[in-house]
Length: 135
Image 1 (cartoon, rainbow, N blue to C red):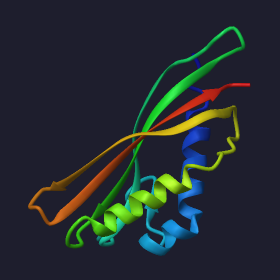
Image 2: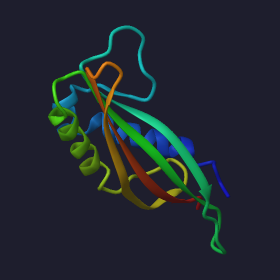
Image 3: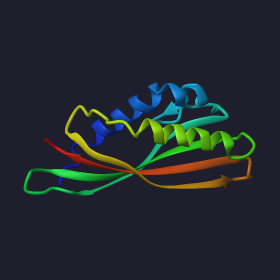
């Protein structure tokens, strides 16, 4: 198994999402790897949890990474969050280049939409699977 590509995957995801024009038009460039201090915008994206499992084979080291990208909003309804979630899915449909290893496949796995806290905040968690090879 190789967990060595996790930082390269995180960097590529952040780069792709933070520079995507369609997503940027919706969230105003508010894509975070770590939440900033102070007040947050009313619509933003944050990279979330990640799990990795071995996917090595006779050809070399590899791993499957399951990661979450979340959309959070305090706007009424889910429309703005769903539009941003769709833009994330579209942005991650194109190949990603990693600084270490390569992406053999990246696919959408599932999503969960919910009201959070006092029902003023909406959250959509998008889960993706990335199969990486360390070659």
